Picture (cartoon, rainbow, N blue to C red):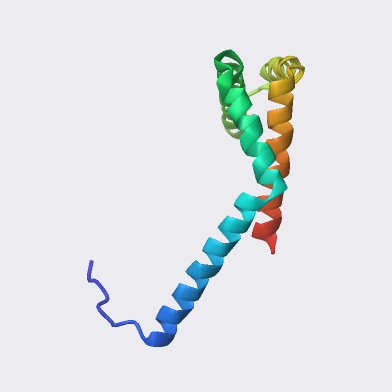
Length: 116
């Protein structure tokens, strides 16, 4: 592969620098948001409880496996019911419930930014 050694003109460099500066500012604003602080606090509480953290990770792995199996055309109806049962059970724990809620709010905020 041949590298393009064309020097970048000043306008192109300014454009990239401006984009980087705006991205850095946006990241800083996100880190100052209420949603981000709630998410990080909920995450710390969840991670402090190794058992709940492990169970939520296992649930997410099960969710990923279900998606993959479904994409491959496999019947996942029974596995889906087991997943839903586990999700409902884990959601009863306040730390897990708070984490999932805070995660959802923060990810919705990020998603809104991506759509803008």
